[in-house]
Amino acid sequence: MDEQTMQTLVRRLDRVERENRRWRWTGAVVLGGIAGGVLMGQSAHPTVANVVEAEKFVLRDAQGKARAWLETASGSVNLALADRDEKSRAFVYVRADGSTGLALYDKTSTRRGGLYVSADGSPSLDLADKEGKAYVQLKLGPDGLPSVSLIDRDGRRVGLFVLPDGRPAVGLVDATAKLRAALDLGRDGEARVILSDKGGTERAELAVLPDGTPRLSLIGHAGRLTWVGP
Image 1: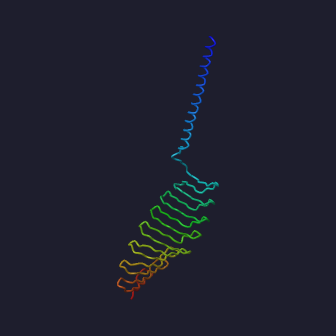
Image 2: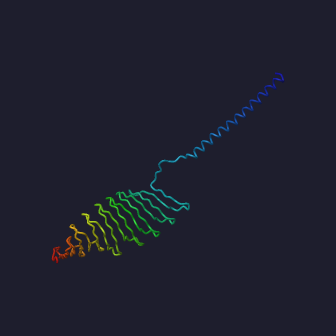
Image 3: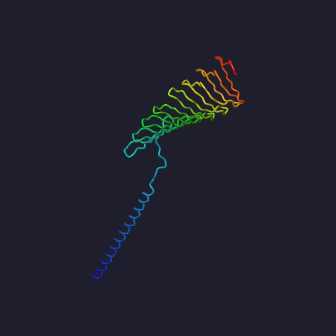
C-alpha cells in the first residue's frame, strides 16, 4: 500500500472518529434532557397516598409541641385541639352509642361550655363558670319540647319550658330536682301559679280564669282539694 493510500485512510478514520464523538455528545445531551424532564415531572406531580391508616394521629407545631390529636378508642372517635402549652381547649367526640359532643375548655383546663347530642337525638347546650359548674342549660327533649334552665350554686334552678300540650311555663326546681313552684297558662287560657311541698306535691293554686275571675285552691296532704275561693 503506497503512502498516498495510507494518508487517505488516516483522514477517513479521523473524520469517522470526529463524527462518533459528535454523536456521543449529542446523545448525552438528549439523555440528560429526558432525565431532567422526568425529574421535573416527578417534582411537579408528587406521588401522594390516597389513604393513610392509623389508630392515632398527632399534629405538632414547629417547636415539636402536640397541638392536635385524632384517635379512636373503645368504639369512640375523639379529636382534641390544644393551645401552645399543649392543654386541650376543644374536644370533639362521637361515642360508640351514637352520641356526639363538643366541649370547650379555658386555659386552666376547666370545661366552660358544651354542645351535645344524646344517643336518642336530643340536643343540649350548657355554659359553666370558672369552676366548671353549669349555670345555664338549653335543651330540646326527645319529644321536641324546649327548655331553658338557670341554675344557682346549690343546684336550684329556674326553668323556662314548654309543656307537652304546647303551653309555656316557668318553674322553680329545688336541689333535689323537685318542682316547687310553677307559672303557666292553663288549658282554657287561665293564668296559674302553683306551689308544691318538698315532695313535689301540689298544695296551692292561684289562678285567674279566662273571664277574669280570681281563684285560690288549697290542697291537703292526701292530694284532695280542701278549699276553693272566693
